[in-house]
Length: 417
Ligand SMILES: Nc1ncnc2c1ncn2[C@@H]1O[C@H](COP(=O)(O)OP(=O)(O)OP(=O)(O)O)[C@@H](O)[C@H]1O
Ligand SMILES: [Mg+2]
Image (cartoon, rainbow, N blue to C red; front, top):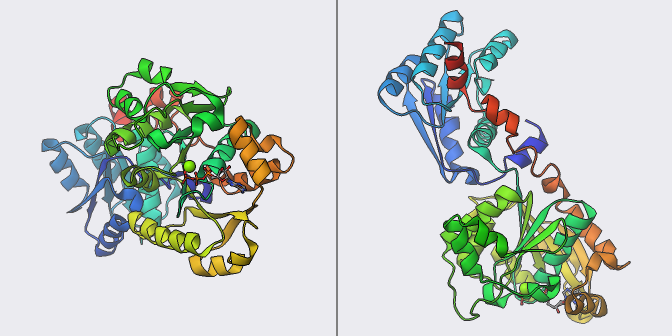
């Protein structure tokens, strides 16, 4: 699996059930270790001691899972016959991966022709199996291929909103990607001034409309900042109330990710419950800090919590040091910040009051300024890898859907019979 594929599968996977039939202790251990992988938080991974015949027996009486993985030592014609029988008892759309004893191109082709998602050869490594399962589930259940980018500060006022807006404009104007900028701060939002619109709704109303699948009403709450940049025209919420249930917010996010290839969320001033929803799902997290001790310390703590939230990994987080030069004699150097955070600083943005406050107050775009464009380019560099291919490589095309090419075993077998 290429690096690109890995970044495509670096998302919280949809709820799904995966069952492995094996008699091999090593494969079982590799499979069970996938439970530690944060992407699989919503995936149920079951193991059954047995092989293809046991799978046939099981699914004759019970509903088959989203993905069934069968390990076999026997790969002669008899085995493919058994697979056909398995296809006959599985639910429509069940995908299958086979683990076999030897590398065999002809067998591989035969299996793929049968609608098998992949053929793996033992010994199986957890990482490889995890990526394979992730790719299969994303293709089968349908990820949107959308990329979620979250921006957050360890401390308030470090420039998260300014940077989110710059990144959103740069992604839409400079990369030409259809982008949605979502603000999770409700009544604290300053987006209406930054982007230039009248708040027409509350975040809570938008989230409710998404839950009720009221697309017309949601559509009316979306402001078109340009032909490529869209924002929720929320912001008229009550400032002192947290009234968006996290699960409603997640539904809104999923809805937006189904339509917009890139969704950028400004998490400054937002309730922790919403932050957790976004940070768990994000493909890239931009952590903004100023070069001051309190901000760097807070960022360090936040990174630690992020790691816990994402099951031990925080590789998706990139550090932006903003407002460098704001108070030179009180600032921590870049190398000290890197030491303190135990990771490299991706971008340093100088303190430029005139530039930023003009942009903010007049609803302008930072990248239209000759100094601002340099900042926008630097910011794009830290998201370019996740954005490239957004909306394409994870999305089923209409043709794929029609042919059922990705959804598995049964469709093909039924077609034969
Ligand atoms: N590099 C910079 N140089 C000068 N001013 C900046 C810079 N970055 C941001 N600002 C300004 O600092 C102020 C705070 O920025 P912003 O509102 O983006 O921060 P925030 O992290 O979103 O804050 P909050 O926690 O209140 O949501 C704004 O007036 C913004 O224009
Ligand atoms: Mg803000």
